[in-house]
Length: 380
Image 1 (cartoon, rainbow, N blue to C red):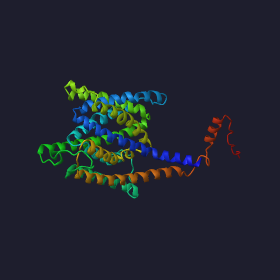
Image 2: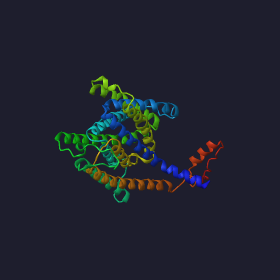
Image 3: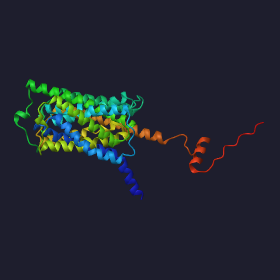
Image 4: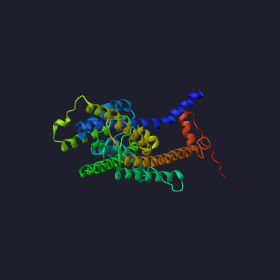
């Protein structure tokens, strides 16, 4: 009995970690599939619309069935926040990200996501979701790790370096592809793509912060995920109709494009929004974004093997620096969580040791037994 309780306790402690690892591996697979689809002519605008249409159809039944009795009342402030959530991530962030991926590579784009924890931490401090105490080591570690991560992101953006294959068995590209291009147009596209990816990462961080704040007012993860996907589908459709005048781009066949839409919609939008919300309520937005390096590693391996992508030395050096800073932040966050648990467990006065007369009266009402009023002192 004790062994089963210990195992169950370990599983409960590991659930946030396992859920976040699942998200990062899912994102890595999505980046690889989408990179192939974009190279085969899939419009990133159309992809975003179809992705969130699939996500809406997938998540709505769960919201209607599982949260029909617990769904909070919709108010105007909550509705406005949901509209903003549906624009920031599904429309703005994703379109900028995939456009930047077209100009760079899937490996570089996923490596740039490593700045998410640092940017999210900065936003969390600004909006008072995170506290910084300069006299405590774990708070200093969070600040130092954030600065290190941003430095690594700058290295990835400004230094390219020689290119090489990550896996020895990967399909090698041509010599022209393998060499560092000095063409001015290519370099300009790389810089443009880098800027777009970094802006999208900032938007993604803002989405995490706003989602965390919205869940406090609207604690229904399935319903919130469904509404975000629906708003993203409608908003993305409007943007696509304005940006793309060719109606043929809406047609996709039974190929990698359809796979990218269905997989991304079910796993990386519908499921991901829900899982992020659940983990975020327990550990906060910084924890959710703290496993980004795993996504980079898996994407680099898949991109090198399936897409013949070469990795630049600058991306590797910058990613290593980001990882060092990232796990410095994680260490600080872990100590934060342990400290908060200890402070919650160490209450100076408990309800069993001290109760007021009103508490006793309420207790008597609940139990159904009358409670006598305390005797008054005799009047002299």
